[in-house]
Length: 204
Ligand code: AMP
Image (cartoon, rainbow, N blue to C red; front, side):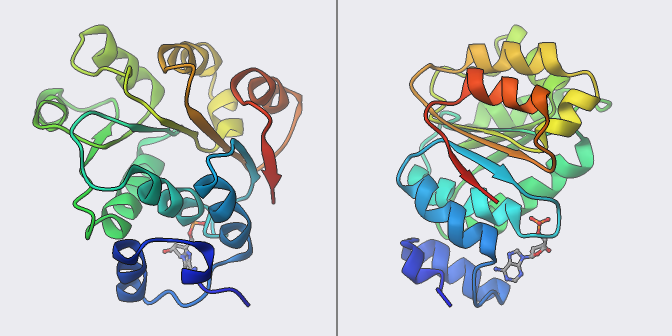
């Protein structure tokens, strides 16, 4: 069985994993981590509970390296609950890199989210509506995004977010890595993947 260090993750990330008590990668992690480190676009078929969040968070943190200031990774998720979970993962695994995150979702005031963005962040985790709000107000810029992660795409489509998701993808630089995770692989998901990803590797 492979270990996390076999997969090519850097020391600060490995240290955070040891502190989390993780010993071996899950199958989706073993498949996705090397491909993401190699800067490939990914289609991941995985449900919650498989370790999918770490599968994309760990190599993305490794790729981004030390904290910068401009948002370089955007994780788009369907719900506030998932946004909170993904943010916890990035902060836990990125703590020795000093990675800063902003958590953006609707139904709450703009104050704290605006403050976080103004202070400078590396990773933005957001639901589509609030993200577009903040982008339209020019509080958030997406022009430095290097890694775009679309998590639970099937649920975003079920919830009617196709227009918003398409707009957000178009706002990101064309030169980027795109990672798509979905529990199901239907025609709608395939359409988004065909359009948004380049020569993707499928992992499941
Ligand atoms: P997820 O599928 O991303 O929702 O993760 C499911 C749960 O598994 C979370 O509580 C993670 O903290 C945990 N987890 C993820 N990867 C590992 C691993 N390699 N070893 C042990 N636990 C893990």
